[in-house]
Each structure stands twice: as structure tokens, then as C-alpha cells.
Length: 479
Image (cartoon, rainbow, N blue to C red; front, side, top):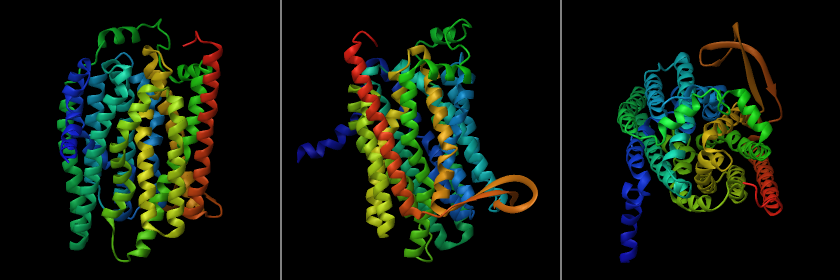
């Protein structure tokens, strides 16, 4: 019993700077402080949070929900621009500037009027905020590469990601509870509650910016000097250089293809789950808004569960190559998609809860693999470029997958084109254009189909792992 009683204290102490490797402590001390505040604002532009607010407060259309679901991944296309922008610049200062702009976007959402134009502002500000987060992630990878040793990197960054996940989950949970309570009072109370929470998150994020400004980027001068040398490899870090890497590095190209196949179903499932859950809860609990339960299922569980699994995944990732790691990890996404399909098939909330727990387990490994996986392929001076390729390709599938998911679920999707007349597809903003129609698969058929897509990704990682194993046996001198 005494051992169990001491466990929470031991777990908490493992997150203190003193538990980190000596060379990492100073940087970690400031990063973990930043992770206590800035993720409050990040929570406000998480797809599963802002899409719920857009649907229930602004009465957003399916197209808006698809755009909000697509925003986190689709914005990654901007990585090619961010990679060029930050090259030769101090990463800490660059991140601080992007963090400040992110808070402005959250403040804009808080001030959005509750009408069609407000809906458009929410979508636009969210897309801008997620684009800024892409820049932050792209720049942060160099800080992590230099500040944290390879043998400890997954463990240290796993702690930072865990703290951020707790803050994001707590913020989303508080938003759901407050919105449910405000809805009982009146529509005006509901709108006021949403505005106050978003404004408070933006204000508290300032403390996170200040904390991150104190992070020291090791080897800063040497790396900036090398990046500014026009004779260095991939000096421009643009799209042409990314294509050159994909052409020259066959293994990384295969890795990116497997990532694409695995990630596409996961992104496609986001709007399907939001739309199907809203319909299911409305049917089961007519007259209720279900903010808390909706955000719990869409956002909190898939973010809080990784807290328990990130340390286990980090231990595995610190000991093995990212491809081998993905061989085991990919099947958790397959199981999560199967459970979501089963839950909607049976109209069973407990099964849906189980599916989101499984998705959280998958996210635990995915968060680490997404941030760190490219380091197993890239030289130190090319880490930003390799991360830029990874992030950009994530953006490409993000620009496709959520809209594909919406189409699979509903059987139709408007493709707007700016015009003077037309039908309103984004609040009061009027467009005209084509639409795609097909037999609607609903939630059940969609998630079972997505599970099959996840299997393809898992098998691609398995094939690549075997190829790497054969190469290691036949060419032991190769890196």
C-alpha cells in the first residue's frame, strides 16, 4: 500500500527538471513552464473542440466542419514556406513570434459574431492558427534535436507532450462543462461563456510565450552560420530541395509513403466521428446540447489517454528504429477504427468510449513518432528539411482526407466556387459550384473502410522494416 501511495509522487517528480539529463535540464525547465500555459490557446483551435463550438454555437455547415477538421493537417502544407523562413534564423525568437500571432487568432475567434460571417471568421482564424502551429513545430524540431540527446530525446519530449496534452484536455473539459451549464441558462449565456474561455486562454498564453523566450538553443551560432552558407547542402530548403531528398533517399521516400497510407484514414475519420456522434447523441438525448460528453469523446479521451501510454511508447522508440516502431504501433489505429465502426453499428456509447481509448493509445505513440521519426533518417544539418517534407506531406493528406471522410459519411460534398449568386455553404457567404455525390456509407461503413486503409499502411511499414533488415545483413557497413 505504501508503494502505491508513493506512486503519484514518483510520477510527478519524474516531470521535474532534476529528473532530466544534465545537459537538458535548463531547456526543459523553461519548455515545461511554457507547456503549462500556451496549450490552453492551442486547445481552442483543436479540430475536435472548435468544430463542436462551430456546430453548436454558430450552426456551422458540413463544409465548415470538414474545413475545421482538415485545418490541423492541411495547414502543414505551409511547412515548405516555414522551412525556408526559419532557415538562418534564431529558432527561439521565430517560435515566439508565431506563438504571439497564434494568440491573436484565438482572440479573433472569441470576438466572432454569431452569424454566418462569424462562422467564416472562426474557420479562417482556425486555419491561420493551425498554420502558425505548423511553423512552431517545424522550428521546434531543431531545438529538440540540439538540446536533447538521441538516447533520451523521446523520454524528455514525451514529458513535454504529456504536460501539453493534460492542459489541452483540461481546457477542453472545462469548456464543455461551462458550455453545458450556460446552455441551461440562455443562448446569450452560452455565447458569453465561449467568449470568456477563449479570451482567458489567449491571455494566459502570454505566460507561455515568456517562458519559451528563455529557452537556450544549443549550437545556435554554428547552425545559423552553416545555414547561411550558400555553398551548404540544401541551402534554400525549398520545395525543390524537398523533392531532391525524396529522389535521393529511397528509404525515407518509402517511409513517407507508408506514413501517408496510415495517416489518411485517421484524418478522414475526424469529421465522420463529429457528425455521427452529434446525430447519435441528439437521437439518444433529444433536447440536450451534450457539450461535455461530445468534447469528452472527441477531444479529451484521445488526448488524456496518451499520458499513460507515452512513457511506454517512448521506451520502445528510444530503443528501436522508427520503422520498426511503426510496425507495432500502426495496428492500434486499425483497432481504433474497427471499434468506432462497431460502436456506431450497435448504437453503443460504451463501445465508442472504448474506441476513443484505443485511439488515445495510438495517439500516444503517434505524437512521439510524428515529432521525432525523421531524425532516424536525417543528418543533423538536414533535420529541418526532413521534418519539412514530413509536415508538408501531412498537409497534403490533410487537404484531402477530411473532405473524403465527409463525402463517405454523407454521400455529398459541395465544391464551392466564388460567384455573385449561388447557395450558402459557409454561413451567409454565398458560393456557387459543383458538388460530388455518391452512396452514403454512414458512420459504420466509413469506419470499416478506414480500418482497411489503416491495414494497408501497417503492411507497408512491415515491408519496409523487412527491407531494412535485409540491407543491414547484406551491408553491415552502411549507416
